[in-house]
Length: 220
Ligand SMILES: Nc1ncnc2c1ncn2[C@@H]1O[C@H](COP(=O)(O)OP(=O)(O)OP(=O)(O)O)[C@@H](O)[C@H]1O
Ligand SMILES: Nc1nc2c(ncn2[C@@H]2O[C@H](COP(=O)(O)O)[C@@H](O)[C@H]2O)c(=O)[nH]1
Image (cartoon, rainbow, N blue to C red; front, top):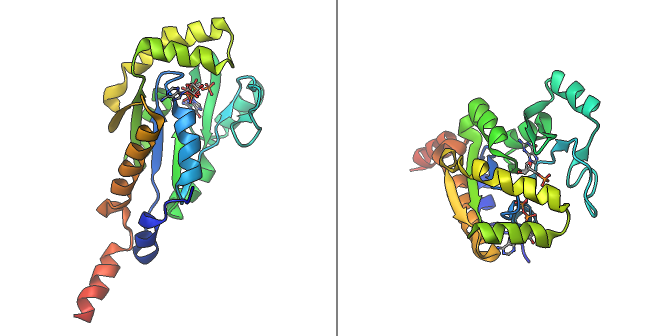
């Protein structure tokens, strides 16, 4: 599928600061599925690759899905201030390396995050204006459990633990800018693309706007 170039063109003329597009949801609602498609289809959108102490799942690739690190390395990096946010989720540590994100934003690239509500709160505290947050709900609890089981990548015990935390995760939906029910993946993706188009046009993100408008007016 061709990548969407439309909203990039205006950025090239005026100059734009990137944003952080955060997806959160209870485990299994579909963040990873949606994120992979968005990265494939959206020009100018890049995935933030988190560091984690959780064991690698079959098929996961180091540096693409996660940076898999030992507990000791994780805490060393956290103490050195290398993370934009970090949290303990389902008994493992997860964190967003800060440098790639900061570079991307200033270069006008948008960054996609698949992180939990704790990380989203930390990013909102540090950098609210750069944040666009989307909370994804499953159509039903039964669907959520079915998706976790069908994914077939976690033990029954892990699935049960994730289901038991779902209500807590969902209780944070009010902290997000946009709420989507992921019943149909294509619809969820097209809704997020619509959000991105609108967010790319926000006046405050268009850093070259004053100069551009001045030039237009001077030409009249
Ligand atoms: N709209 C949908 N309809 C049916 N199945 C879906 C839908 N969206 C995602 N799935 C499936 O549900 C399972 C869980 O999806 P996914 O791994 O993307 O969830 P997640 O939110 O990233 O979970 P986690 O937080 O545990 O990483 C996958 O097998 C995926 O193919
Ligand atoms: N606060 C953060 N949460 C993160 C990060 N990377 C992933 N996550 C969240 O953890 C759970 C579990 O993920 P899984 O890959 O083990 O299924 C899920 O809710 C992710 O959104 C991060 O860097 N920071």
